[in-house]
Length: 329
Image (cartoon, rainbow, N blue to C red; front, side, top):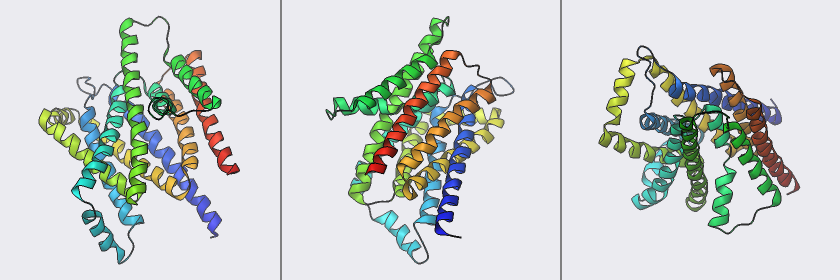
């Protein structure tokens, strides 16, 4: 097989894997937080426990990726030895400890938002990462942005507003949505901090992406484990699973698809580019919204259709500009 054909087949495999993992992940995430489980109609509300299992699965999968992609033949023992011994405790805690904290909070706020808003709104909100990034750039770094970037942010804000706005809803529902959107903004802010911290640490320490994925999840597991132990949250979560055993299958598949999806995204960025990956994940988010409508019977209004269109118009515009500037360079 020619090299070009192999790379094309490899990219297709990455696209299919990302679509499959995250479409299933989205369905299960919404199911976990919105389903009333048999026999008593109780809903799963243990975000911290779910986060613990999610980070644990991410740590396991990233470690497997290190073994598969970064260790070959006689290098395996040396690579594993370096993984364990090449870091001072100060470096580990100062670097990975901080990254794990922002990464963990981003995931927690995102998951917890589903208690108050629908999955399609959460997906659209999570697509609006450029809003907190620009705000932080203006406030902290005094950075200037182009007119097109401001227009895209306005389109995003308008799209999310149109999607979330409904006439004739109760004050309680409005307050619930506002709370959910605030959790999303907190998640986006943490995402905005995590990315630069990861990039700086990778450049300073010359480490692999899978390595940082492994350690940040290992620290995250430690943080969440301590919280669960001190609060006794794991006891309540295990009791819920014992009374509603059908939820266990959903949790296992949810964690597995989350870990594999994240691993494939990292692989795509490393072997192709962040732009290619952004294009794949943008279309995936649009499909996730459609699948949510089909599976859970959401009935979108005209204003919500307009909101979805504006959000993905803004994101597609950003991807096109990045592609165009990359082509010129």
